[in-house]
Image (cartoon, rainbow, N blue to C red; front, side, top):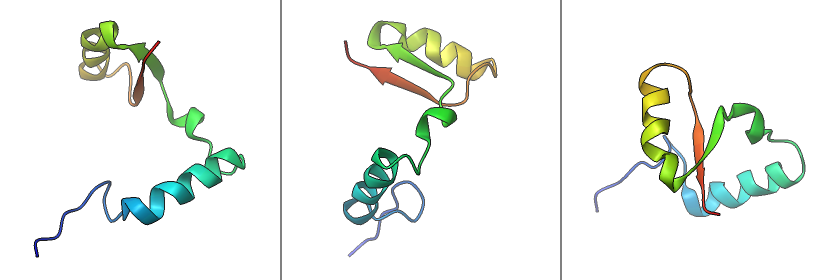
Length: 63
């Protein structure tokens, strides 16, 4: 069986629920890692910001 890596050495079924728990407890401050939020219509602008070094991590939100 071939092994795959998602998010480095993360085991998604185990780790993502743990990350969510840490976030809801206020112990994982994800919001401080974000440089912005975009709508799907703004996605190309978001790539421009990344390419230009003006953003690091952005989240696409559905409204």
